[in-house]
Length: 112
Image (cartoon, rainbow, N blue to C red; front, top):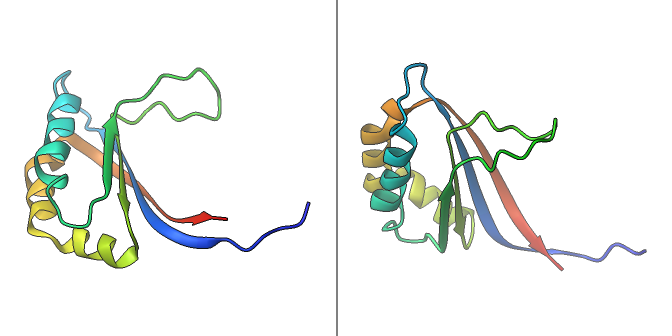
């Protein structure tokens, strides 16, 4: 099958928050609420999804994170503005006690 040229049409910012050592049962809910409170209002956010692990029982699936966040932007410039936005900084300041580490995957979306 021939490979066709794809166009970069967007930017996905995927963030996985891992629980802190002493995380209580309400930490994930607090983090999810913080994502909605702060991050959805940032200009340039086209779509924001946030949730918890599905618990899929496969060896290749990482179920150790507490909360996953996926944010879609039109392009990397919109992502860069999001990173420097005051609401993003407020989110980090308020919610960072809920995680021990963060793993981020930034992806350029390519569509045929």
